[in-house]
Length: 284
Image (cartoon, rainbow, N blue to C red; front, side, top):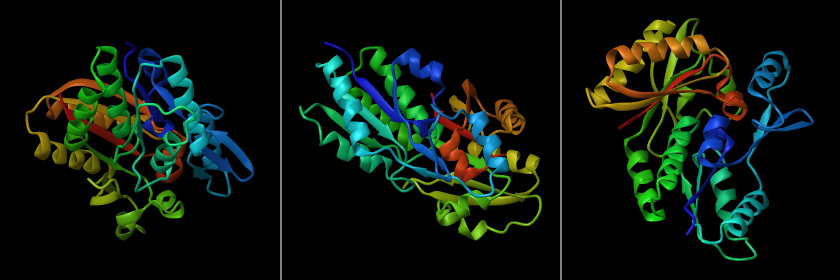
């Protein structure tokens, strides 16, 4: 019997080499600059996107994959691996219609298959962590039920904090949610945000200066995890230096057992803008 197959979407920001290593299927969202449409991470690289974002007069827009695109992915996997259950994990339903599109796509298959669609209630590598964990377990021979239980436990334990240079892109893109109270921050005030347990962007604090923002994020994680061993992923939108400095600070003060890096892609970058830095953490 073949193992469980894992599907996610491009907002998971899982590096291509990791997807290829574990056979993770990625269904891309779309990014539009005016009339031009691109597949996130496929027909538009991250570097190309941030270059265009900096020079574009209009804010790009994004859209989720259609249900048909998910149906085609599930049917292809089902034909190739007829004995394999499929677990499909996606961007928070509070931020995008991607989860609903995947759910609908799973009901449209010509031949019914064992497809379980999961709302990550997270974003970027918060979603990516779940996808990689599921794929690692599938590669080790875990059952569908074992993987689903592990995803549920990780989803409850995982946390993320990030800071932005500006809230302009979140506000313009209509994804700011509870963070609206922080809009209009004065010069050098860095808003710190998270994704709450319901999967919405939520403000945490605002501090003066990048270094204080970094230390505040580390302090928040220290309060959450103490000396517990943790897995940590650092992500960034275009400006890698801030993210690596944040990661180094966290490594010096937290019990980090494993660390990964990821370049946050175009869909999330559309709403976060350049200059965001994030840490995604879960217990080992």
